[in-house]
Length: 272
Ligand SMILES: [Zn+2]
Ligand SMILES: [Zn+2]
Image (cartoon, rainbow, N blue to C red; front, side):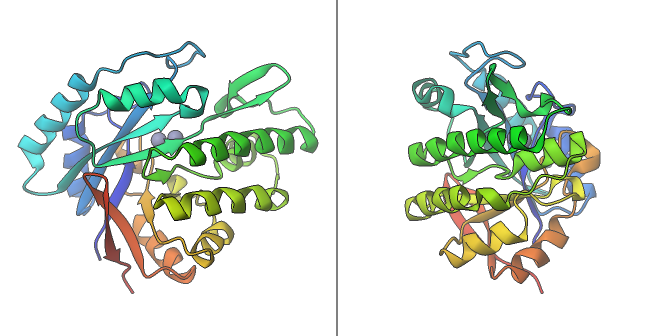
């Protein structure tokens, strides 16, 4: 079984903890064959709505070079990025990418939505609102995701059903994505002809983001490009249930999962 974790944060992310070298060492200990670093590169400053005009790619590259020097012979390492909030300014997002070193892979992610008070990070969503509020927040989130999909300068859409994690798992609600499937399908129909994929974010062993229903829909619509990622921010979550989710992908009709090299997809057989 070939195990590749394609969503990993190092201490280059504001919410990351370990250097890339330490994450690589942990990946080897956990039996991973390949690991792609996808640190946060956002169009806004961390924890604010203030625009970010530049990113310290040199610091990222230095960590990556050191990880490869120490562990590159024992685990295949790739350099990617999780591009966050591109829809807030596609110009700023393009500029951030134009100044980047050669990347293997880019996750395009939306972490925010809006309500009557404006944009806010879904991580901080209120826990005391009615169901209609949460559905409106998901609608707005999916509108941003569609705009991101239409822009298209990334490899896969990150954690497509992220609001499920923030609303149901963190705020203990029971909100279904079902009423939003028309929007989801439009997003999938937008990315597939562009050669853009989705990730199956293993979400620390909780509900995969997205779950089997959307994975099956994506496959049925002709989607083939799909990465598996733990979204680990510390050692304990690295590679979490990547092997089990290979089986889920097979059940949803996939025969391959995807790794990337210099932005080009490679297809890896799903194990039996
Ligand atoms: Zn993310
Ligand atoms: Zn992430």
